[in-house]
Image (cartoon, rainbow, N blue to C red):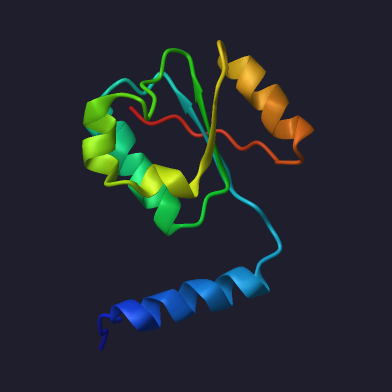
Length: 106
């Protein structure tokens, strides 16, 4: 049987998980241009406590009003950078100590 956590229980779960986890998490968005998709990614990233978000390859950024409408203000919880190419974003992530793992969805 599963049950839904209320807001306080969910916050406690995230806080406890964060204390037990030493790893940091960041994302590189490569060419994601749909503003509503980017907003949803930002919202999910904030919920999962992502530290940093790089926009690369022409990805739509949080400055787009449609992204902001979908992100619902959660972009303030992430630091963000824009890079010309994905290679530049990967180099920046590695320089900041992130291990880069790639995933391509179709």
